[in-house]
Length: 226
Ligand code: CA
Image 1 (tube, rainbow, N blue to C red):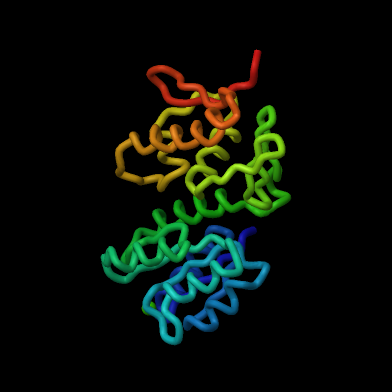
Image 2 (cartoon, rainbow, N blue to C red; image 1 turned 90 degrees about the horizontal axis):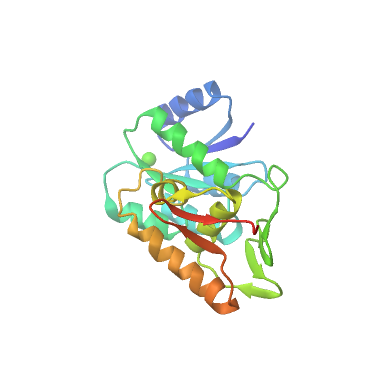
């Protein structure tokens, strides 16, 4: 079972989270300050980090920044106040998600599941996704068309990965939004079209191929030939 590190200086909250997560079957570890949190977050057996922002020692934002220099472990920030600056700073530092305290435990558990699925460890899923000459290496997080490396942004990569994982299934814009962006993203589904266009520029246009098809009235699909 996945092991979750709780970095939280308020003992009551840490204890509450520990109990809830254990109840869900997760292993847990607690760190009560930023420095200990950073040290523990870099340990190999940690699968996800719940990271409070207001911490003694190092702030959660700083912990996140330093973790990202060395590790892609999923990080969900816990923000005490509804402070947009903190959220943006956390996401800029590479946090995967954030949740504002007080939160419903069900919501946190849902976000944990999403983050863990996105980052499943090598071995739990195939490490290579292919479609014709297109290859996505999930371990190295790289994409190639034939010998040529594709320079994709994080979102482009995730969108392509999701399309490839669901090959031969027509995916709606909402499905793509919910799975590639935040599952409760309130944005316009146009963002999906914009990113599909980026991918087509980088793959279809560059190599003169037709990888991503539009399904009229539905959304998009990557389909095997024939
Ligand atoms: Ca705190």
